[in-house]
Length: 211
Image 1 (spheres, rainbow, N blue to C red):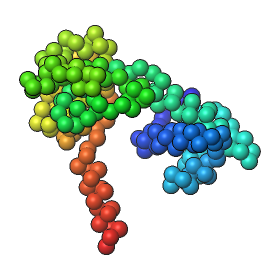
Image 2 (image 1 turned 180 degrees about the horizontal axis):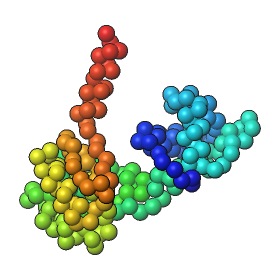
Image 3 (image 1 turned 120 degrees about the vertical axis):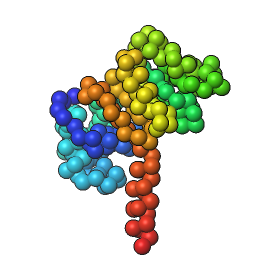
Image 4 (image 1 turned 90 degrees about the horizontal axis):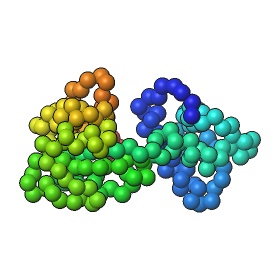
């Protein structure tokens, strides 16, 4: 894999490439060209070529394109899907419980080792294959779990507090689904998924389309 800096938009495209290529492989397709990928996914040919060159040294074959299998290997390695990334989840409510039951995380290299909550009705439960512990136990348990990623699914009112606790416990990356912007040290990686913002964009684009 080549070294270099990648934009957020570029990083978000790579899982889309991987899904598309995996579907091609299931159909028995061995080679694919950048123009075909771009046409199917709505990207420019040049954009696809630059994206793939950034994570793979393999050159395409004339009139054939690139090997689908080798591109999948490069993408899975780049995205860390072949690694074991232990994580914890904080907030085992409706969204948190759904994420705990999501079966595809393991194929992406994400292993949720424990969940934490303050609800007595949740504590002690198994959601999917994950045990729910009291939030007060998080700082004690995280080091033994070797979890560097914390997934936050709490209400906005407590998200900053639990994020701070996760960082104090040793987590170095926060994947937040809480509807609030978190303020964390520069040494902590933060990725925020704002469902309200995403829905607002979708609704606005739909209104524009229907006008």
